[in-house]
Image 1 (cartoon, one colour):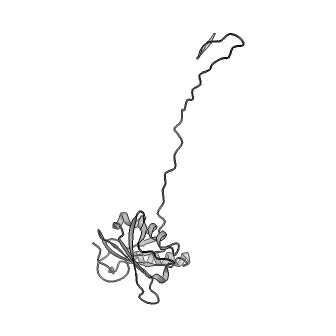
Image 2 (cartoon, helix red, strand yellow):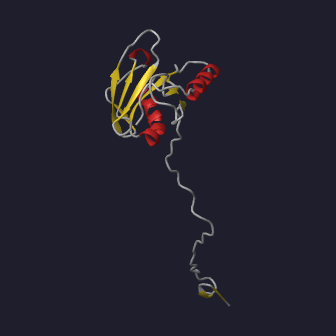
Length: 165
């Protein structure tokens, strides 16, 4: 009598067994880092007329942490508008404003402006694609109010405040 390792050894002797593992299913999936876009953003339609008027979009950040929020915004806007090279913000609305801000591995220069008591905007500049003005909704704004404002601004089809390239 024999098995897959050869003839059986004499009684009392140690038996050597060759073992193999067989996998009949795919290897386990490995985790791949992925960060889903988290920016809450509404943009005007691209075919809106150029000229002077309302903002190009509205942004509702989740916090007042500019580096983190700018990274989330760049995740969405970089593929659409080109890499953001510079941003101007009102320093009264952000906790800390380092200059430059490192965003997804590259430096974004930060300018500061203060244009009045109700200044809730930011300007984004891209060397490859142009300039955009976004209305910034304060992070602590109630969700229903922010949603109405986002729909209103992103649906606005009047003239833009900036000439898009």
